[in-house]
Length: 259
Ligand code: ADP
Image 1 (cartoon, rainbow, N blue to C red):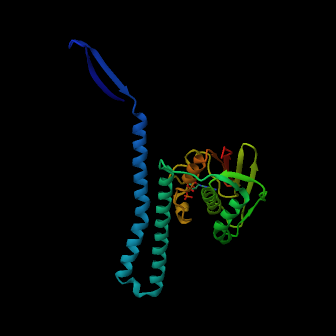
Image 2: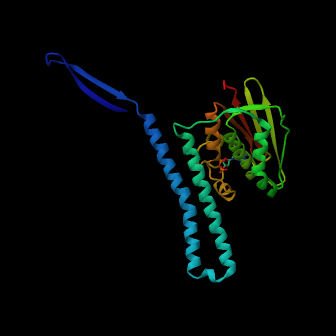
Image 3: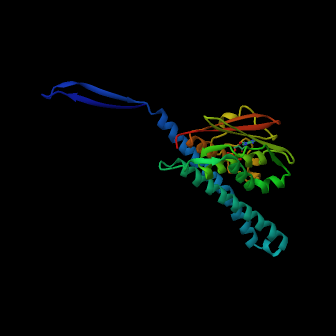
């Protein structure tokens, strides 16, 4: 609590009393803590690939590059770490863009099946690599009120996770339900699942259940934070249900609004 006090003086200079203002700043302190955590997380996330790029390039310059196989292996690591940095900076800029006050969505009535098929195309490489499939027919007449580019991005993030956190050759199911209230998109995988104790923190920036696995799959830890921000900017909701070793289900709801 911050306390501020001031004397109250009457018209003739006489002392009337004192005003004391108690200000509850718990929320401010909490916000400051969140900000500090975020900066610490970002620094850590940036430092890891930078340290690796620095270490491997120094070793090469110190003579290791004489061996063509080592040269190739190390350059591949350097490239992979640079890609990670790129992705991380992109996601950070994305998230801060969404949080800016002037952030605007370009909402219009769009075909749900075209959004889903665009997102599927983007993840098709990763999907094929793990010999996975996406099933579920989307009615071509169904529409949703959304910013198409942003909704594609949301779908790509959710599908990428479904691929990354599943075993090879499993299936991802997409279902849609459209009513006068809005559109619901359900994405269900047969993956590793998430323990119920982890679910409440899942949408926090940089929160990962398994840090090593997320890193290996190229995750930045920001995907679901971006999903939540974008869906909420649409006035919608995102829900997750999961069972360990059985699979995970994300339910996205986008309401109809006057447009
Ligand atoms: P990341 O880049 O690490 O995937 P996200 O914000 O997209 O970051 O997800 C946060 C964490 O939630 C992941 O690290 C992972 O532990 C967990 N997660 C997300 N989606 C799934 C899923 N479909 N199945 C299992 N775990 C998931």
